[in-house]
Image: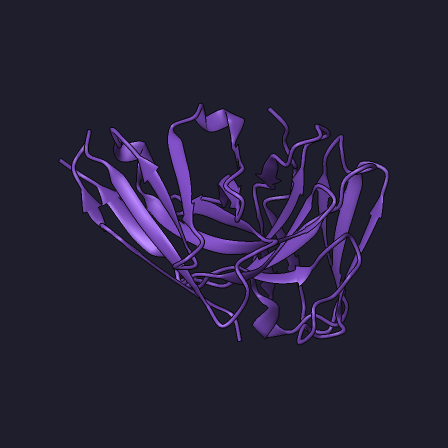
Length: 120
Length: 109
């Protein structure tokens, strides 16, 4: 059974760097789009972007390239970084596995979520 | 930027049919996906590629799509189906640029 386990710093001060990592267990790493999604408190889901095992990326254009994703295929891990966080980055961050059919994506496995709070 | 529009809330009595809609200009050309999220939990995929149901999802969940609107139907809704439902798709460009709808809170009581 595929499992995604994520971790990262939960409490940040404004201007610090957000760093999250997601590890994949029990399934292949290749041929999937490894995705980050966030959810501010009391609000809906927001797609941040995805990274293929090859390293190619797609990001949410509304977030204006604020985020950077990377992948370590040897460890079956992928990561998310954002410099200079603000209070608006306070959210639960999820990693997910995206299975592709054309340009569509099916998120069939999710991490447990990491709560990130940005506070002075 | 591309948007998917959902009603904020839908309410039905147990046993009734709940329908949640999602509208978007690219839906005639792009698949819709539906996720259920219960309080404090990660979302769960309930419908993919407009009409397909993952294994383990009850048969009362079904999906359809026509023109610019996709619909999630829960036939014979149960109290345990309460939660937030999100549609997901991508815009009409070649690269994947994912978008979630604003979410619909389903109440069954």
